[in-house]
Length: 221
Image (cartoon, rainbow, N blue to C red):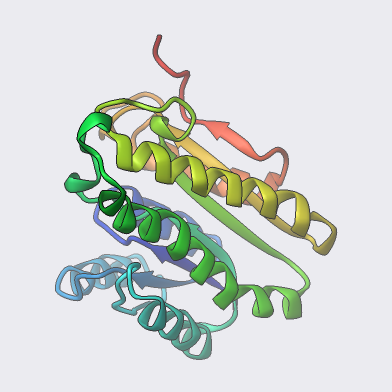
């Protein structure tokens, strides 16, 4: 059994994606800074008959993040699918004219150093498997920068560049890197952006393995 590793596990999209990949036969590694809420997610997955484990780590701490992913692979099986979708902190979203160099340190660590750390942790295992999928989930500011959300706009753009380079560099090794852009809010009643619909979209990106950038719905004008 191989593992679906979810960075940024939460009760919305995270739980829905874990259920979808778990239903397909993957064990589930839930990685989140807060250990407290992971128990409830594990219980929900256990009720569905899905094998899952909790691996607390902060994406701003490369050492604990690497250790969590290595432990997950040792405990549950090699990571075949990595989903990087933690929710940025509110203080990353200052207006551009109020943003100084120091204000970009955590957003860039969150959206660039975090993904690089995760990929470097799971890539050797994917290469041994001979396959793998790297899924990056971002908001609309990744492709359309917002002057009131400077930190995430800059950091998401950098994450997008990194993910796009992975898409091209790893394709010959049967490792697929792809990005899902979610322009608006994730809502249970949304036609295209409910947790369940997005989870299905992510699963199809893993199985169909075509193209780099996908949109949950069109960007608003």
